[in-house]
Image (cartoon, rainbow, N blue to C red):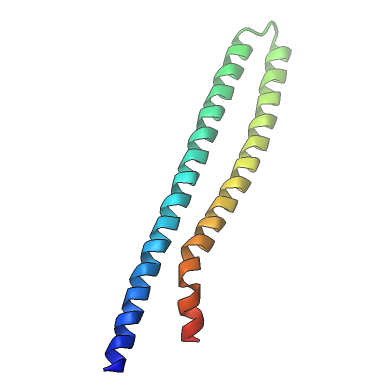
Length: 108
């Protein structure tokens, strides 16, 4: 009878941990979606502004300079965003695993 109680308890812990993990994944996924949406919006706005500046530039040299500045800023922005997203994905993995840490420790 004790074996059944242990299995039942383990099953309940597993379900509880699964729900906690799912909640953490949902929260992290939402943060990633917000971050990605903000980056996309800013990137599109910067591209539009740059395009308008290039069209209104007075010379080819000025247009090339504007485009070069935009490319540098876009690259720096992309690298920063990629770093931020990698941190968010790492946090997602940590938070999703956290509820199961105790169960894994018990199993060892």
